[in-house]
Image (cartoon, rainbow, N blue to C red; front, side):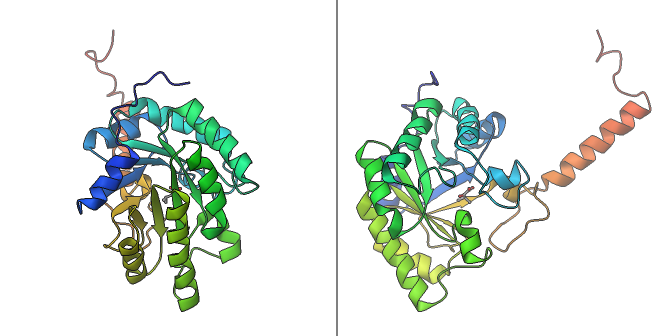
Length: 271
Ligand code: KIV
């Protein structure tokens, strides 16, 4: 159990008010203490401990193997660093789909053990009962619709969702039903910008887009992607704000060179 004071952090209410005032919400992912500290000090509104850690931290092809204990481990590290941002932890595959009670029990573990401010679950209308159960018992839930990486085997790939009228209608319905069930925000992933705009306009709660265009109420990216650490992954919705892979490569090459040539450490760097 964390002993950190989390009362000064951004809350679901602050995010709701940002939308009402027409102000955009900034969100990024983090999986470790130092990154979370940098994001928080830079002024990010929401930090998601995403199960994308299965890809970018663990090197897996999908997020499916991520466990609840792993999410708790990473969320604890992130939470220790954060004083201002809202911290949300992803519920991993098979920790909330089996029943609302099971979902509530597992969401409760996250809240008790990590000092997160809420959990995120993937799924549309089908998750309404679960969202209701968790939120009615005091745990904020961020929903996630459109492309849902935990359903990747059902979708058959990471292609854009909501391109057919039928699918677009279902996604719009999903958003409304999840708001009704008590979700405080909804991540809208990889859908046409026009559809994300319609959803954003139809909801009181904020939409957080990733590949959802400019009309979402906020934006989220996977931090290693936007920092240019994950060079092999560059879909069009990711903007590189830095080239950290190159920066790290150059720094490590200099270090190797200095060590090999006996130029590190110097006397001043020794005891
Ligand atoms: O797992 C994750 O990082 C996510 C974001 C991409 C929204 O779900």
